[in-house]
Length: 586
Image 1 (spheres, rainbow, N blue to C red):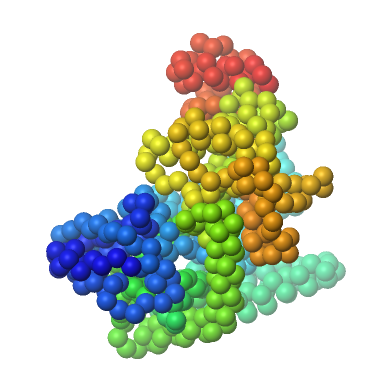
Image 2: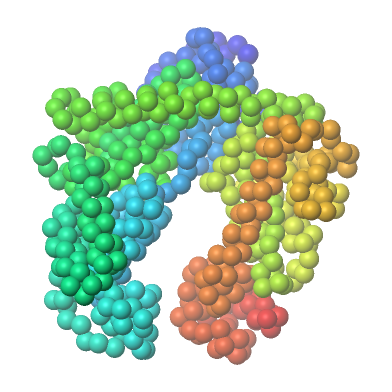
């Protein structure tokens, strides 16, 4: 460890953000502090263990930026984390976004499940989040059966099956009054807020009708539906004597692990909970704050946040621009304490497993580092391609940090229509990925993991050489059954790694994940429909241009029949040339 005594004496006692660097000048950690000098000194003057010890041993230098307030230091910290994605900042193990139930504000509303929603941009009615996606689907299916809402994405020209089975009012052909629709919306909203009076009344009426018609199977199904509603609402009820809407946060720290618990309270009901355990540097309050920023960046920010005494509610209030409460007594304080108990229980359940997993990954990482003769090994990138319609290619890149997927850094690539084979597709993807590294001066990985052997490694070396970059490369060679057979280094030598070892298992997981990611991208494009799918794969066509083309031409037939001049009027000369060539290949 270097001696920073002299440099630390010059650090001011003001708020700001600090950046730790390794011997290559790469930023490996970004933090914030009310008092920069005190915080930076703490790294080098106290006994550290676990992840903190690894960080301190890696530090070769540090920089800092003074700010005028702690809010500015938090904003700067988050900005720098997004820019550099440092290896020691927290990585959300559970990065999924929870589903919400959305009732649209269209003339003829639709009820559906949505993800990745942002309250400020969304003018529809949102309810959730639902940590249990099955419960959300069950709720939506039940409401859609009871209330004849619009079921299709776009109105058709004739009545469909839903109309004939009485699950739609036939909005495409019938004149439905606004009063009828508003009454349905009112009852649905009331149920989603926790009042089941109207919906249970309707189910009871349907159940009696089914019994009278001797349809006992349907009657039993409706009876079970009523019991489900009753059980769910009883289990969700929180004794707060109000219809409060907020998220409640607490945490528990133990021996380098930080467990975070979030309760989702809606209309006085516990909609669900989220918990996650992360490895910690011991800067607890700062890490919880950073975690909340990352967590709500992926989901819907609540109207109110309830936090424990240790957190800075004013900082969170200023950053999120919402009400933040820190209860001192009463039922809300008891609920905060309950969240801490839940975080501790989850920690007790998972800590040993997490520690074992962390130890296995660390050991496997060190084994690979020594095997390849690398000074440092943390971040790995892997690539794969997939055919679209048998001719056109798409590409995918996945990123793993310490053998954990970092999904924030995954990337999808639309590949030029001139590309007709796997190696050419890989050349284009690799060039675009690492040319961006040079242009943006952004991070580069410690290792590239190629899906294949000598040919794939040669392509990667060719592209890196053309960019005057050096990044170590390995290839995962498959056998005739498309299973990973062995590992090849960049000198085309076979590496001796036991197939039943953890290292071999972790590397094959990377290979499986990049294959899944590329295939999923390919399938998603195909599932969007012919015109939209083809435009997704077209060179130079992003979301804005795609919408303009869809609006202007409306169908694949009209788009393919369009002249170059017609395309040019919509998307400009240069992109029109590429699209015109692309369409002629179809």
